[in-house]
Image (cartoon, rainbow, N blue to C red; front, side, top):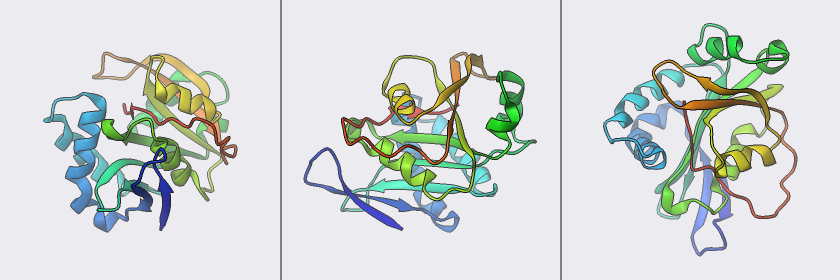
Length: 203
């Protein structure tokens, strides 16, 4: 599956492609380098997160999308899966959110990571990746957590119709406060105006 696009009107053709589970090991180090750069983390955090990614690849409805340039270099990626009881994030968020937890988490696709390499930020790749991940999903909602702060990530999620489910939530082992957000699927159609992509999404 490939969706050729133009990145910010530049000369390079960017394809949004599906990466099957079997191809993930070959792409893992490239994806984790983007994760580290986008989050500003030490390089040592990449392998640990990569281990989590490979474990997540066994979850129900796992999807991994990558943005590749004409030379096949990865410029961004996103992935997620069905959010189910017994999963670390799902169980923590169930206790944290206010409102109808069954509505938001009962048939939800959990967006685990969405990152674009810093040189390619501001070109709309984040929104394209997000829309590709959501395309054709049978789920009722998409849910995610993202660090608090006024940034491109929040502007993107607001534009895509995400609601606050919990704010300033603290996950174990991380001092940063997170917002927990949810959106109904399918997403509204693109407006065609000034798309921006998130710097990073992680927990």
